[in-house]
Length: 290
Image (cartoon, rainbow, N blue to C red; front, side, top):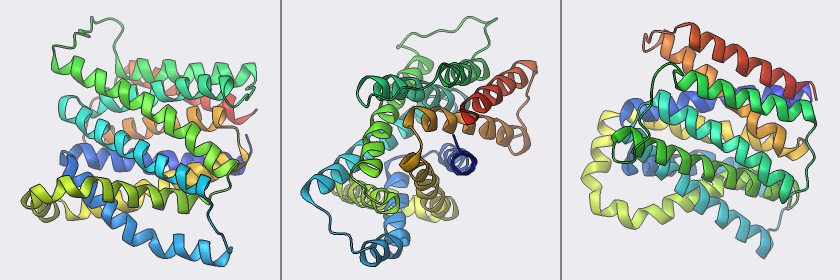
């Protein structure tokens, strides 16, 4: 992995942790997701249209089909994530979703895209996954995984979110690296599609949309800007970096989220979390030096 790719991924991770923090703190929900997607569509439209015009890009049917598929996958992702936050804590849902996604991504990349990550890269990805789990779960305590509990429901949604992350990561990798769809255009079309698909349901609850805008206007705008910017940086790295390296390296966002919890939410961080962070950094270094 090149230094440029690493910087892109670190920037993406910081922005990603930031907008997830805001989504959880505000309670999320379909109205919040729709509002942020709608604003994103407006904010990034000049960039997306400008790139299409400047580069004289004429999208064919296959590219348009992949852009539609991206919109569907990302809509499912946002709704599952928001649902998971309704039942579980940020420190449970976020790490589990982000930790399971890269492992599935590597498996798909190896089986379908014929990528061949080195042994060191695979070990690095494994260390990141171990760090995520150690950051989330205390091995000295028994965890109730029953689906009947709110924690069990949150875990189920987190794992489904992780599967969606793996799906859209490989799908979007093919879109930007093989079909040569500009990352900004792909992400913008995803938000446009999500806004359109959710609109028929949102119009039934306009009062809820107005309430979210009234109470969380700044957070909505921040998510609308940070969310796409985070993924655009990651997509840019995917253009010239194997997805089996990019996907697990992005999970350093877990460390940023832990730091936000420490300094903003004043959460207590013990030895377990410090060890987990060290393991994750080690995994990132192993990925970055390959």
